[in-house]
Amino acid sequence: MRTWFPYPLLSAGLLAIWLLLNQSVAPGTILMGSVLATGLGWVTLKLGLARSHPRRVLLMLRFGFTIALDIIRSNLAVAAVILRGRRRPPNSGFLTVDIDLDDENALALLACVMTATPGTAWLEYDRLRKSLLFHVLDMENERVWIDTVKRYEAALKEIFG
Image (cartoon, rainbow, N blue to C red; front, side, top):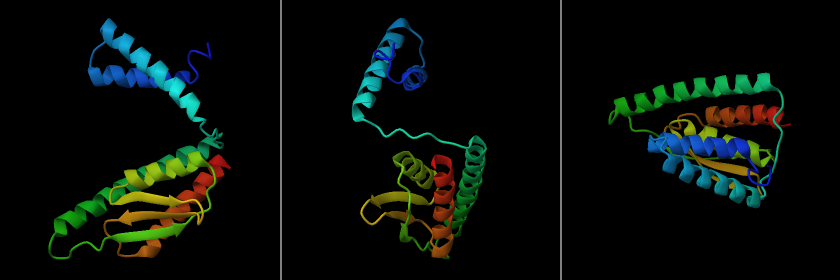
């Protein structure tokens, strides 16, 4: 069974997304979605992804709650930047932060968090210097952004430790 479905949860999730996007449970749609989900599972297997084992479920939940609050705060801050308009234009810029994450899945999660947070965008990770470059819409205080990334990094280190 593992040969046909190397990542059964991934395949099931992809099939569910396919059915939701097509808004149909017709036999042809299910068949096509199954073929795609199985094929993408095989492709994923060939990529040789790094496996990591997240630990400390309670810390993961707290991290998720923190991220949700930060995203809400960032939405409000971006709304304020838009509403103040021409009175005070945003002070956007690029910021480089040195980070000490080695786990590829932790880095991917950090990239998702930084990009999902309104007003920020992950641009580049330099493996040699172990530095992260991202863009901030309104960078009034660089230290706040550096501290935020460091806080995320510390939590991800504990989770993927």
